Image (cartoon, rainbow, N blue to C red; front, side):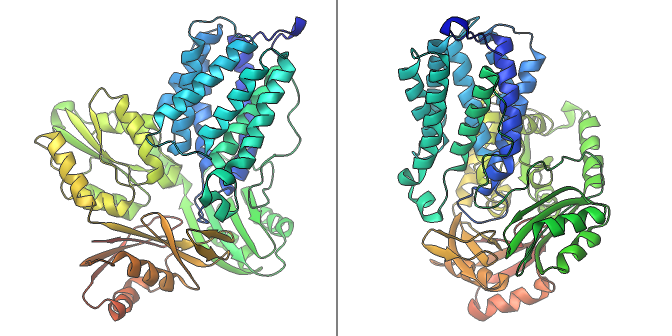
Length: 541
């Protein structure tokens, strides 16, 4: 506990370490609720997970240092977060920690005024890290909380901390007023909520107050507390049940009886999303089928993932002399898409969807193993783009980011990749070819929402074009046709469809003629992508 005797805050490195550890515990318990706060009702919301993994990387950096002074400890934390940042929210969080550390400087102890200055420094660094700052996001929440804390710094330690925290949550509640897409979707900003949760954990840690008994954040879905992380192998199995009168407790009990662990069931009486680790995926699917209709099935072999991970970690990499001058690194959501990138020359492919979002350290390590003089990275995910840029900033010019925001764009860009030549010219050519590609994503809505002017009911098939929701339909095929219809406006010649894990049976044979009925001049190619969450990913060019 920080020493607050005589109405003074006294935060040295050890006090900050304890407070940050409490914040990690509270963020972990609220992770699933934060994940559920997603503007788009797609099943891969992971803001909470990305922030938690980044925070844990920061704590690891702090543990590896020996700083007992506030400034030294915060520098160690910031370095850990820099290379461990995952996703946009994680990258921004890492920049907040960098600003916190920079503002602390060489201080051995922080009082209330000093900690308030650090929060202001964290806010300034976050704004500087974002090319086009958008209000109503996590940067707003920290800015408004730090401003309130600065005013209250002389009010005594408890008043200062509680005023800062109260303003953080008040700011979260205001985010829909600042950002129309949040208001339309009926949610607050998930990254902003993550910031408020972290601050709440820090305050409880500093004042030695117990954390609340239940998670604070439930998002738009009821979240089961205390989901257990399981380090064993088997199958990571997920699916969505739609029906009437669905009972979470009954389903959880049946999954436990089927030998399941790490059980997480979220949703309501008409739609539930299930996650479970089980030896035989069919046993888990059978539980769901007894209660309703299943969709979005996914079963990933954790033993295969574990072996691939161990092989990757044990591999010392090729002899640098055997590497090409310019290497190519790609992030891929599925094995089929990964194979396509390898066919186009990628020396290193990071399976982002199989193990969660990749970190800046993952990308930088892969880049060093891919090229001798330079490496080009294709993030292929809007949420991985900032992570890749952070890795590039730490590479001293070695790593070049080609800002692909989807696998479809990345695969088109990879056609222009060359192992030798002027790296800037090659990257420019890759960027240019992406401009002619439109990306269509088809999934199932995990909740009822209204986004981008489209009203969506939970369970409906939805289509996004270049990241914007364009249609909600009864079936995946209907949503696919609607998305392609938008994507071909202005002219197109080729549509390449990558089938995901949850693609309907017979899709490979059915889709070419189905699409030809509406777009007879469009050449259609259907390939196995293997990606989770999105039964259809399409590149239209």
